[in-house]
Amino acid sequence: MRRVALIASLVVLAACTSTSSTDITLSSSTPTSNQVVYTTKIIGSLPSVVDLVERLPEDNWLYVVSRNGTVERWSRDGSRIDSVLDISSQTSGEGERGLLGLIFRHTKQTTEAFINYTNRNGDTVVSQLSVKSDGTFDTSQSITGKTILTIEQPYANHNGGGLAIGPDKFLYIGTGDGGSANDPERRALDTSSLLGKILRIDPKNSDDVGGTGYNIPSDNPYISTKGARPEIWSIGVRNPWRFTFDTYGNMWIADVGQNAWEEVSVATGSLTQGGGRGVSFGWSAYEGTHRFNPDVSSPNSIQPIYEYPHEDGACSISGGALGTNVSALGRAGWYFFGDFCTGTVTAILTNGTATVASETVATQLGNISAVRATSTALYVLSFDGAVRQLTVARKN
Image (cartoon, rainbow, N blue to C red; front, side, top):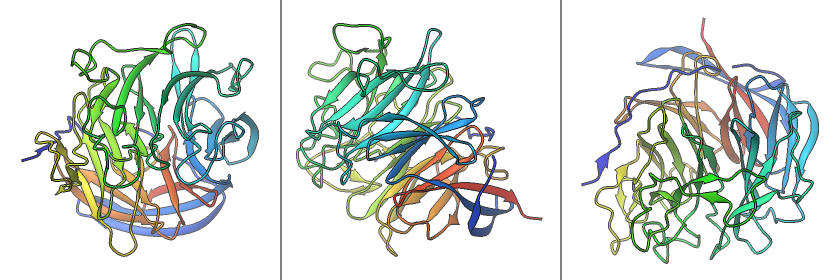
């Protein structure tokens, strides 16, 4: 039997705003809360947009990422300010490759940016860049920054790409299982491989030189396991394209499925440590809650908190963001995600062990590449370039 993840508490955070032309409005009601109205508005466009990140809540801008290798800075109303990074000469934005993720980390000394991209050989690279006080990146030494980790990719797909900073200030990295289909080399549950994992490392200061670009946190679960990679935090993911931490440290993962099921999984964390320590999410012994490869096992893996089948055109989950009392009035603690094929955004509410409510938020938004959140708003990114702000309001 697979055990169920116990989530310590539900999220009641804070964040919301809206601009530009409205294109979708839906109303919804559930047994758990008052009726709300969802509205999406296009605030700007960037070809092949895959990520949207905030550096600090007090900034008057956002960072918008294109798979093609660029990061633009936009004002919060969607006006373009400048381009802060262009690594298009170092990557190829085709298929599931390119510049895939961005995150910021603040220490007492510095603010750093981390990017996750595939290089010209198709291998995963995680690099570190210093961030100037004006919000621009320091690329004086290298346009891609300081490489801190490179992972060889055996196939062109399932490169992951998600990055997150945990409550412990360590860098968490989502890696796909290496690609092809069905986890052919069974890497996801193999602790000697970095593929199919959530990794957790402590990057060195960007000015440090020599050795590897990171330290291994002393409480990583496999640090003393013979033959295992000490960078591993969690195992058994297929393609965790986007994952995030809530304010209680719980880890929420939208893991892309194989042929039949898409899933959202949650692992319990704390105020001082990100969720998922030593956890198996089950792939490829399981796809969602369903037995998959019979020659591998993961008896203690946790079940997804939510799964949906490949029906009515659904094919690939694009996570994911948590609503707050400002960004999603009436939907604080709900988790929002999209489907790449249907263009539908869905929100779910959990009670800590199961999903107790779900609802359709928006439809016909094209190929959704991600749903992201800042301290003040929710955003839906579509692969045609559209960046939409999602507003949630109580219905009168």
